[in-house]
Image 1 (tube, rainbow, N blue to C red):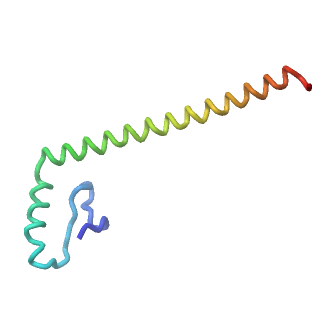
Image 2 (image 1 turned 180 degrees about the horizontal axis):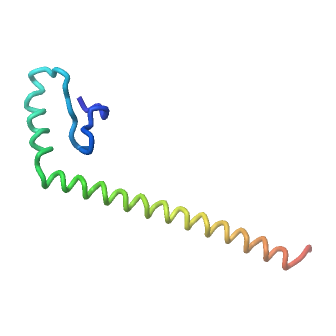
Image 3 (image 1 turned 30 degrees about the vertical axis):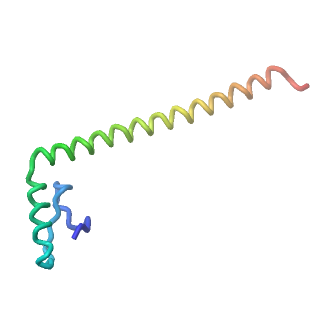
Amino acid sequence: MFDQRYVKQGEQYVLDVDEELPPEMDPLMKRLARAALDGELRATLEMQDEYECILDARERALAERDKLIVERENLIAELQSQLRGPR
């Protein structure tokens, strides 16, 4: 039922379900449909997605910064070693 192949085009939170579901699933499907139509819930989900994207981008930037710091520290250590000369 929650197979992502059924996601509606342009509607990542809504699934098109054409398969026949058992009758005991009706209450769940009705609640899910109401949730999908709730504009406030949809706005909250979209805001959460945007927030996650921002956090992911920041995390990537911090990881790249840390990598550059390590590379520069290694370069500094190597240059200092060369300046001291052989012992």
